[in-house]
Length: 219
Length: 240
Image (cartoon, each protein chain N blue to C red):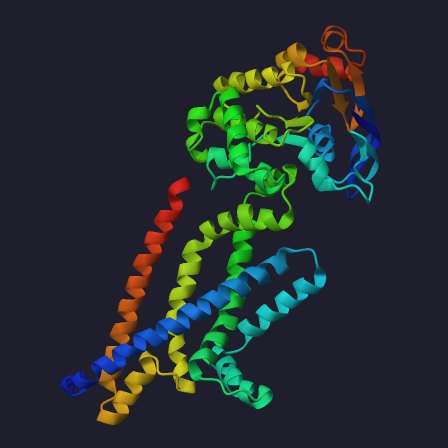
C-alpha cells in the first residue's frame, strides 16, 4: 500500500481554487443552456415549421456528437475562423451552454406538454396573448414540474465540466492533474479531486431539494 | 347580440355540428341541453373560437368571428368562459387569478383591478379566500372563483360548459346560486348543463341538440311540458 497524501498538502489550496472555475463554467453554461432550452422548446411546440426543424436539428447535432469534441471544435474554431483569441473558460461556458441547451429544451418541452391543456384554453378564453400566456401561465407551471430534472441536469453538468481539462481550463480536474505532474503522484490529487466533486454534488442536491420545497407552496 | 348561421364543425370525417342556426338576444339566458356527444360543448366552444368552425357564420355584437380582419383576442375579452374543470391557474392566488387578465390584457390599473376582483369575490362569497392558492379550495369554491375570474374581464356574454358536472352533489347548489344571481343582473348567458331543474327555472330559452343538430329551440315551459320532437321526449324521460 503506497498512498501518501502529505505530498499534496501544500497544493490543496491550489486545487480548491478550481472549485470557483468549475462552478463558474457550470453556472454560466446553465444560464446559457436554460435560455437556449426555453427558446428551442418554444420552437419545438410552435407551429412554424422552419423553427421546429431548426430546433430538432440543433438538438440532434448536440446530442449526437461527443461533448468533448464539441468543446474542442469551438476552442479551435473561434480563433481560426473568427480571428478572435478566446480563453478556455469562456470557451467552456459557450460549449457547455450550447450543449446543455439541447438537453434542457427536451426537458422543458416535455414539461410544457405535461401542463393541463385546460390551462391554455382558460388563458385563451380570457384573451391572454400567446407570449404572455407562455411566460406567465404555462412555463412557470412547466418549470415547477420539471425542477427535479433541471437540478439533475445542473448536477450532471457540474461533473461533466471536468472534460475542460482537454482545453487546459484550470478547473478542479486540471489542477489536480497539474499537481500530479509536479509531485509525481497522480493518484492522491485525483482522489482528492474526486472527493471535492462528490461533496459539491451532495451540496447541490441538498440545495435542489430546498428550492423544490419552496416552489411547492401553492400545493 | 349573437347570431349563428349554418354552423358546421368537423373533426376529419366526423361531423360534430351539422348546420346550427339561431339568434341570441341581449340578456337572454340560454340552456343548451342534449345527450352526450350531441355537440353541445363543441357548439359553445365555437363561440369563442376555442374550436374553429369548419363553415358557417357567427356574429357577436356586430363582429363576424371568422373574418380575417376580426381580432379574436378582442372577442375573447368580451366572451367569458367557465369550464367544467375550472382551470384556475394553480400557481397564482385567488386574487391573482382574477387580476391577471384585466391587468395584462386590458391594461387595467393594478389597484383598480384588485378593487374589482375583491368586489367580485365578495359577490361569490369568497372574499376571505383571496390570498389562498386554488388547491386549497373545494370544487364549488373553485368554480365560483372561475366565474368571478371570467367576470373580471367585464364580458358581454358568459359561456358555461357543464359548470357543475365535475362537482360533488353538495357543491352544485352554491355554484348554481351564483349563476342565478348573475342571470338576475341581466348577463347574457349560454349554459351547457345537465341540471334540468336549473334550466327550467333560470333559462329563458332551451336549445336541445341531438346528433349535431338543433332540434328544439323553445321556451322552458314548452320544452319540459310538451317537447315537440320524439328525441326530446325520450331524452327527458331518461333524465327526469
